[in-house]
Length: 441
Image (cartoon, rainbow, N blue to C red; front, side, top):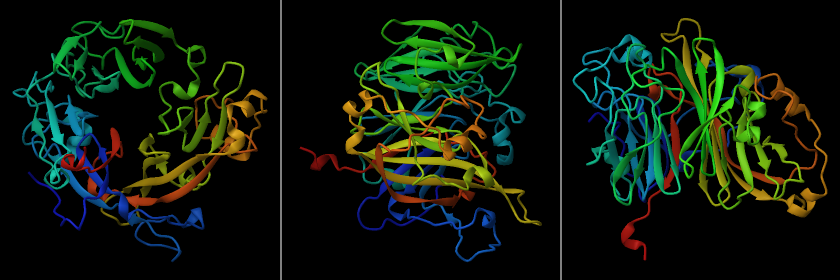
C-alpha cells in the first residue's frame, strides 16, 4: 500500500482520525498549538503580508489514499470496541486519472467490483494494535452488507449499526435493495429494514431524490432529502424502536425537535455533560444548554474563544464537524479553500480551521438558574451569523451572561495539501488514544 512514511517517536500518539471520500488521515494532536491572527486581511497563501500570520502544515501522522490502494471511494465509518469499520462506497473505473476522482460521475465504475461498482463490503482496522496507526492495514471483514451502499449514512444507536444508502455518483445507477439495513455486532448479522419512502425499488435517487443530510436524536434518525423533480426539501424520520418511517413535511420549523438537532446542523454532546451540545450554525460554533424541563428556554452561547473570527469573511467554507475528545473536551473542524497567489499551479489551496477546547459549566448555568427564565438577547456575533446562514436566520440568539467557561487548547488554520485535488469535504472524524489491552484489567 502507498502510505506516507514517518518514524514512530516514543509513546503512542493521541490521534484524531479523519476520513474524506478518498483518504484516511491520522492527525497528531500533540503537535497542535494556539495560533494568533491579528488581521483578517492578511490571510494569504505563499506570500504573507504580515510576519505575525502563518498557515501551518497540518501535522499528519499517517495518510492512506484509499482509492489508490484499491478501496472504494466515499466509504463511511463507525467505531466499535476500538476497531474502525469502513463500509459502502463506489469503486472507480480502473486506470482513471486520480485527478478525476473528486468528480466520480466523470470516471465511471469498475463494473467487476461488488454490485456493478457499488460496494457491499466492510473493511476493518484494529486500533488496539500498537502498529495500527503506522501500518494502516484495512482488512476485509468476514461479513458484508446485504446490499451495496454508495456514500452511506452510518449511525450507531443502542449498540446496533444502521446503514442507509446515500447518493450514487452515476445518475443511471440503480440502487440495490435493501437500501436500509442494520448490523448487530453481538451476533454479527445484517438485517433488512423498511424501505425508505423517498426511494422506490429499482430507482436511482440521482434522478428523483437526493439525501442531503441527517441527524440523530435519541433513537430517531432524521433525514433531509431534496426532490430533484420539484426542487423541494422533504424531512423524514425513522425510530429504531418503532421500526417505521414518517414523513415530517417540507419545513424545518414544524419538526418535533429543536432546530439545532435537525439535519444541516452538525453537532455533538460534550462528554460528561448530557445537557451541553456543541454545534455549527453557518461558520460560527455555538453551545446550547438544553433545559431539564419544558418550561425553560434553551440557552445559546457563541464560542468566541475558539471561533476563527476571520474564517467566514475570508475563506470559502464547507460543512463543519464537531468531534468528542474526552471528558469535557471537544474539537471543531471547518474545511475550506482560499485563493492561491497569481501564477500558482493550483487556483486555490485547501485549508482546515481546527480548534480544541475544554468546556466547564459556570455556577449560574444550573437548572435552577434556567428555571428563572433568563431572557435571550441577540448579540453582535449572532447578528453576524444571520448574514452567513440561510437556516433559522432569526432563531439563534446569544445571552449576555455566558453559562460556560471555554479554555482554548489549540486553534489555527492548516494546509490540507495532503488531500491533493480532492474537494475539501470531511465524511467523519473521531479521536483515539491508544490503550494497550494487556494493560486494561
